[in-house]
Length: 89
Image 1 (tube, rainbow, N blue to C red):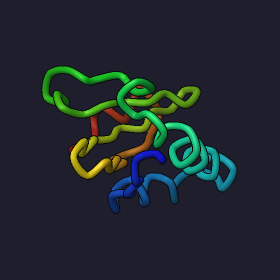
Image 2: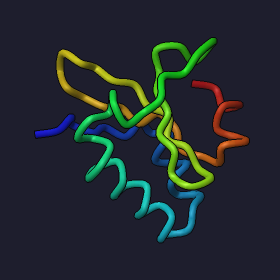
Image 3: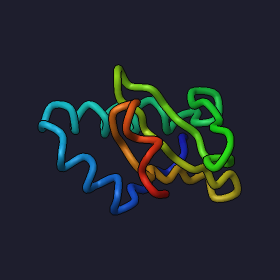
Image 4: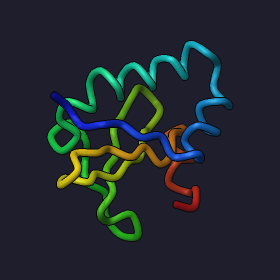
């Protein structure tokens, strides 16, 4: 059994800005793939994003945190690789 996935309200707003197919792709990849092993599949971030992880989905990124004790993955934001790191956490 994988990690429980929670979507922060900011990530939900980000998904609403995408076309329906793109949003569905993110949700499916996170729920079906990333939730199984978010530590191995994601890349740890550095600097002001230390403690967070990113998962690449084409030109887009999913930024998330992990609660290992509760086995919970919290998707914080979704966006294009050039823009996602500029957003406030």
